[in-house]
Image (cartoon, rainbow, N blue to C red; front, side):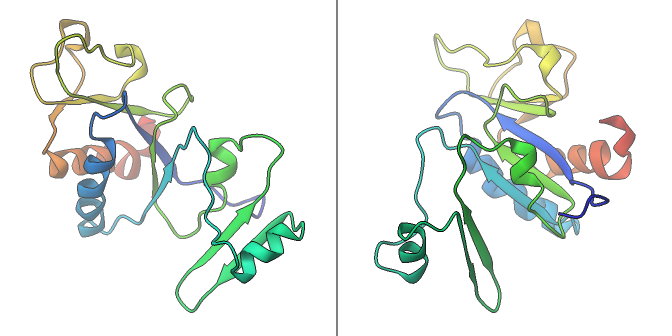
Length: 175
């Protein structure tokens, strides 16, 4: 990425496992697209993954020892980069072009702005303290410890899209 390029706004959708982060993002993305916001997503994978299909050319190049492999088609490209350690969120985000906002699932300990998704079930606690959050998305009343934050329902995709645009696109100094 050129030195003068700017990484788009990064906002994390955080929460414990099985809270509905992926489902929420699937519905939020079209809301942002309707508002002409170009969105990219990053998924935190704690277990590792492999995008290459054994036997395909890109897999064969990787197996031969290439440090990075790119596959380019008329409408997409993908880069698989070997790293000696987990890449930072900023390093991964720096590869995105032509987007206004990067939504990240996970990375709740990173310094970027966060919105937590919290389904209220007996014994469950919020993953993050109020001071680490921009907002809370929940299926019930907010815990007293988080009163004062913007609160959204689990299906309030439109209002969350408006909130993100107001916070990061219309008034980026609010970060």
